[in-house]
Length: 492
Image (cartoon, rainbow, N blue to C red; front, side, top):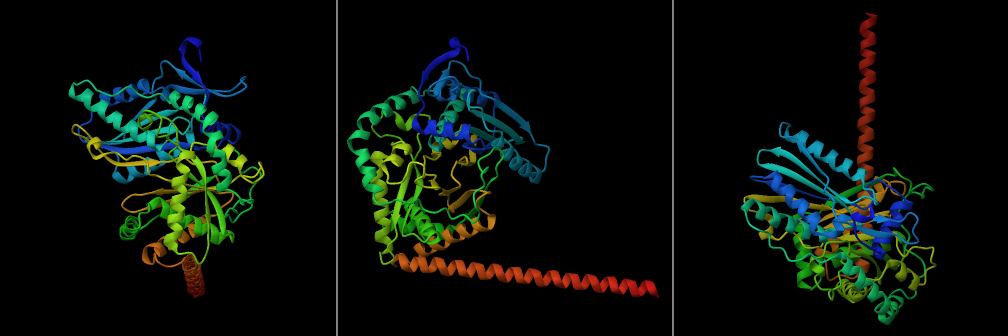
């Protein structure tokens, strides 16, 4: 970086500082790299689209931000005056649909593993892949140091408005872009005043008596080099039926709960059952956007924060009452969700060297593409999907509230086997089924359902294994008989 190229310099947020620390200390392919994908259907003006994308980089300082730390007492983020958006264009229109799908999957994996260099702006890139004369798929990748899922929705809406203006010969009328620097200034003031006038007391009270972290439901001992570069991070997913998802949504609506609360409750019960603890804590993602900061809902940057969620499991407690209490606790957290996790850790009764939690839940509930913004002239956006990047936690649960609820467990392969992760997803499905089918039972009954479901799945797996072994033995016997018959024929 040259001095004349620099527009601004300011400190990173606590979240950015933590991500930067983990990214440098334990580099791992795909760590905190997120991807937005969609299909662009209809007449497509690629030059106008690329101009619109570059206009976003020029508009938002966070896209022109890199990080510097070498030779400095503290890391800083550096905003450059001019940055060109990296774009890769592919043409797969001559390939079969099967080949396109296969190659797209490989492209997503390779792109995630590529990662980003923190000291080079922009920490984002774009791929346009032509699949047919009227369809082009988009991959927009970015590092969590500069954006979160909420910000991605803002960016996509603005991108479509700019594109529509350029293709329609009009001037795009976008309000001035709020700067992420404004949030940094707000956060510094809040830390000086807000943290000293309520936040510490709130978190001390919330975590009082919690003195040992909830055991990780892993089936492998940690490797000493488990955070080394090249480590294996994998994911397994389940998709609830549309009928089951509708039943959960209706349950939430009827009892003034959120789908997020139901997923949090299910995860808390799974952790309680696997750990044998009746008092569990896990991490959860919160928007982190302070309602008192002007323009925060339109600011592009990484606001999402991690907070501890504590759940006490009392078997004789009515399920619905317990879920309401869990939701009320989350509502109370909102005014203190901006606290750096390192401060919250210090206010707990755990030793500094022990983490508050090792499992993390991210419920994707940021602003979706609004229907009017899902089209830009004759161009239509379809199959939009946001894929959050892997985190530094050994086990991360992602919930995507589509028409069919999707649950994804990202896991460290050095700590978890695929079978163990499949078991945990099965446990989650069992608990959510119990919520939907018998919401007026107590927690003891839900835990009994969980134990019964696990035994049933184990029996089914054992039966399948026995059947496979029988088939294998039959195959061996048939093979031996064939060989024997050939030998007899040859001897004649």
